[in-house]
Length: 355
Image 1 (tube, one colour):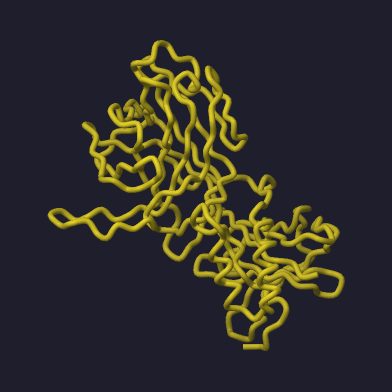
Image 2 (cartoon, helix red, strand yellow):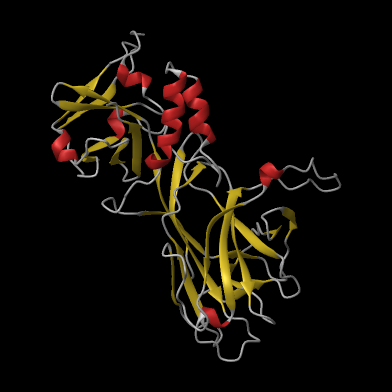
C-alpha cells in the first residue's frame, strides 16, 4: 500500500444517511481518516451541501415495477383507524450494493363513501411518505422481540394538499388523475427527489400516512397476490402488527433509483483526476465509459485508464477532466461523477474538493 495521498485521504462516502436525520455515517467515516480535527468539523458542516446533487442530466431508471394492471382492482385502507397506515415492501438490487431511491410512485383510490370526488384534495388535507428497513415479524407462538425505535419508519416526504384540487404544497410531490376503478377515481402520486439511501437485497418498507377530511379514509390501489407482506404502522412510523386483508394483496408501486459508488478527486496538473474505486457491484471492467459525466457541467473524461494506483493488484478506473468543462466554481465544496454499468444500471459517486 502506497503512502496516503491527498486523493485517498478524501475518499469518503457522501451518501445520505439511511434515515431522515443527520448524516451520521459521514461523521463516523471522517473520524477514521487522517484529517485534522478542526478540518473534520468543517468538512462535516459543509457536507450537507454535498447531498444536494442535480441528477436531471441522468435519466431516472425504473428499478422496481409493481405498477397497476388489469388486475389492480383492489383497494386497501383502514376504515376504523385514522392514526395508522398500511405499509408494504420492495427489494432493489442484491446484497453488498448501495442504492439511492430517487422517486417512488404510488396510487390512491377514492373512498367509496365520498360523493363524487373530483380531486384528492376533496378527501385529504395532508399526506406523508414513510420508509425504512422492514422489521422482522415475530415467529408464531413466540413473543415479540425488544421494542426498538431503530425499526421505526422515517418521513421521507410530506405535503399539504390544496382543498378541492390535486395541487401539493411540496413541489417534490406531483399528483395527477389516474384511471377509474369500479367507477371510483384514482390518483397517481409521485414523490420526487427522495435521495433515500437503502441497502440492496433487503426488504424496504414504505407506506403513506394520510390526514383525511372528516368522515373519509385513505385507500391504496393494490393488486391481488398470494404473498402478502402488509404491516400496520402508527402515524409516527412505529410498527404495530402484521396486517391481514380479507383478500391478500400487494400495494402498487414503482421505484426509480441508482447505485452509489465511491470516488476520490485530486488535482493533477491543470486537470482533475477522478478515481472510481472498485466495489463488489462495480469493477472497472463493468463501467460503460461512454456514460461517464463529471461535475455540474456534465463533462466527459479527457482520458480513462485502468491503473493499479495502490499497488494492491486491484486496478481501478482513473479519469482526467478539465475543470472548466466540469463547471466547477472556485468555492464548490464537492463534485459528483455519474455513469452506468454495462448492464445499464446507473451509478453516482461524490467526493469533497480540496482548495
